[in-house]
Length: 426
Image 1 (cartoon, rainbow, N blue to C red):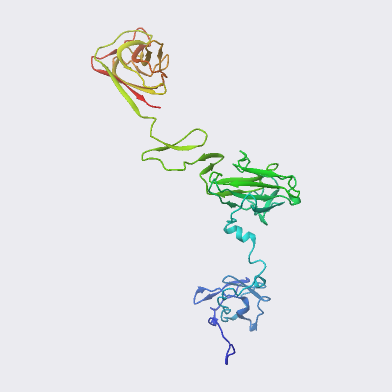
Image 2 (cartoon, rainbow, N blue to C red):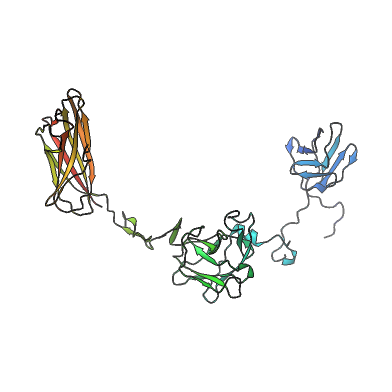
């Protein structure tokens, strides 16, 4: 709309703080002591030694600095720097008023879109899959595996090795994705899927490769549903680290190449998640590690002698495990005595299975505990052992002793000793 008078100016005219010159070309711009950043070099009037300088030719700006085309000296004088009003804002365009031809060619690119989210959210059916166009190019620093593996890498829809997002969360309505490798650059570079970037563990479920890469009609398709792993790596089957990975919200989790399939429904209160050993997780009642029974035996009878072989002391306990998978925790306590210098008395536990063999569950020589003689040495003795008897027959655990030489003596003081066994469920 026409107007009468001066033209519209946006912003203030600002005279910047004076500058003392020295042997440099770069000087900080300040206004009232605060750093000042001009919007454009062309809105600045700079007088040096009484001569107005040409913007861009005689000086430029870099942030809040003015940079002259050559270093000044202390004898030079910057008379003044005047910054004109800011460049006028054109305002917000009306809706549906900007056409494609008005956009700068570099303003919207696949790379910029990839930096935000490289996904195609539309549904892809088996007859009309979501299609990505694949080419092979020389890697640049934009590739996540630049300098690793092959010097070549995949370009997908014009973007070098993007991270892709796949959709599909219903086994009855899979999403189909097609990776078109008909471009001649794909020759010798079949695109397949793996559980790790180094191609450890090929993922072939619902993956189909068709044709010969580099020729018309060559492509790889993948059908995506709720059990497609949350992370897969698209890589060349013949060369290392050409691709990147895809993300998917899934009920099957890829943890460094191990697939874990999550339950599809919640469990009951107090349940925990267990695995079947093949990566399938489910809820189950708590179990394992539970004390199934406890039995204690006692003795107040002294046991002494000079035997150098392990000998029964009369302190024992009998338990009958409820399952062959159970473990038995054995704990014994007594008071020991040895009356000869530099001799040793050793203590152990012997497992005696009804109708079976007897087994020392400690070391055959030094048992599970020991004490050393020093004139007369009296000491508490505690023995602990975790046994895996693998039986449901009655078991007697006998506390035994021996000495290192005939001159040594081992005995129980005339106090109550005890031995307790706990059956631990598997």
